[in-house]
Length: 290
Image (cartoon, rainbow, N blue to C red; front, side):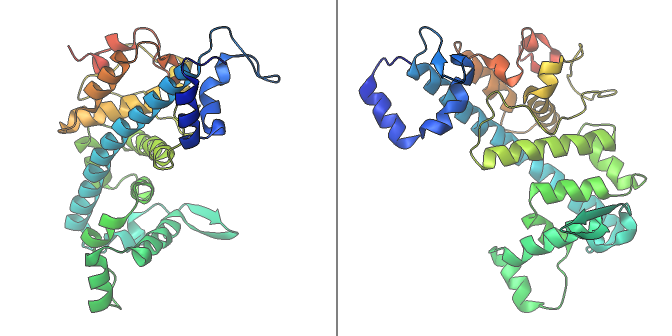
């Protein structure tokens, strides 16, 4: 590997570990066993990839915040109006599917309820502490407890709602997706990306474990005209596109899509196909900001 400025490289390596940067130069090697690099591989180019990835994660985290708050608000509102403040504890509203965790089989709803209780118990929010002090024997209403639920927990509550529950369809429709099943898969994929970002992990060149369905029937906003290639489905591009669609539909103040495009335009030497942004992606209606 070559260096344009070894002194600056030394300083950066004091702040960013060698092994953390390794994931960004893997494809720049001609031999991954002997760790031989292609000609003209510069440390500064690795740093550009690293910094691009960091900036992209920050943009995405802002978009995730907007989506999470919108989903949380709709869960609280629609289900509390229809079934009361303790709807989240009512097993009749949830699918009876079983899940085994740590050798214990219970309904998915009960497992999720236990996770929510743990989040409630360890919360340091003033309104939660106040509830625990004033009403130690009473369960908190949804508009309290759901405010401290993680996005993963919110996603699990939504997914486990009975498929024929009208409010499940209403929430998906209000988020711009006509299918609760598709929307549930989107939430799971977004939660997966959120957890990567929350741990400051690498999105660069990552193959996604959770992949959203891109079969969006009668989209309410700009979407894709052509089916995505497998490389786009397997990489972050597909989930990022779903997030861009949701933020567009919600008309959020942060224009996540515009920020991503500006970031890409400002970094022309970064090979963005590593995220699944293949040739022609910017011509699709979803990504066309003209």
